[in-house]
Length: 257
Image 1 (cartoon, rainbow, N blue to C red):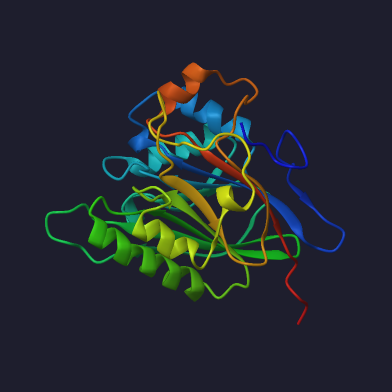
Image 2 (cartoon, rainbow, N blue to C red):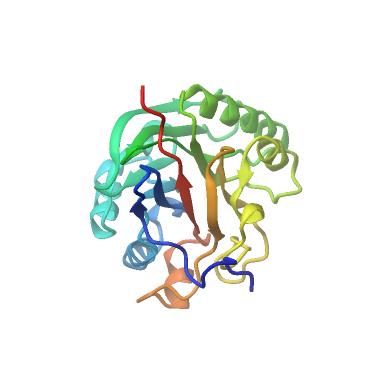
């Protein structure tokens, strides 16, 4: 099983003396919280993330209340997204200083589910980071177009460094996945750690969930977390139908002035 070349566990969150920051980012499709929400909260808490990029957050009746309960149970707060982004959301812990947020709805193809992006710009000490959570289409041509929109939107955040994560609905050899990976670092390919396959949770056979980072961000490790404290295999299977992807990233400090 691949691990980080430097440690058996991902580095903990911290701010460096030079103003850079080590940030733990989790991407997780939570299937509209239709499964075991207590197990879901345990998984998120055990990952100790600074940012959680959620896909399939609740979108309908009392969706804000449901997402707020999950955030509180897992040591997070709602940053943006949910119903207003057609499913993607971003949670964060109190280490993050929020600069701005925006939910983006993508063009609707008749007969298909509406898609969107949840985006934000946050700071960790002297490090400034653009953030995007996405859940791409089931239809290949629409998915490829949405991959391009993801790149455009991430660039439009106006930050030197950014992270994007989500459920791409295709493996790394897919054209949409490859379109993103041509411009961003695929966390697993950059520095594999933990497990690789993300879907389904009971017997994972495909890597369709991923975290990407812009050039200049150092990937310290990225993959499906294994051996989480206080979390059993049953928890991972009961929480949702996807496995989470966790990364530790070192974000350079933004130059002064």
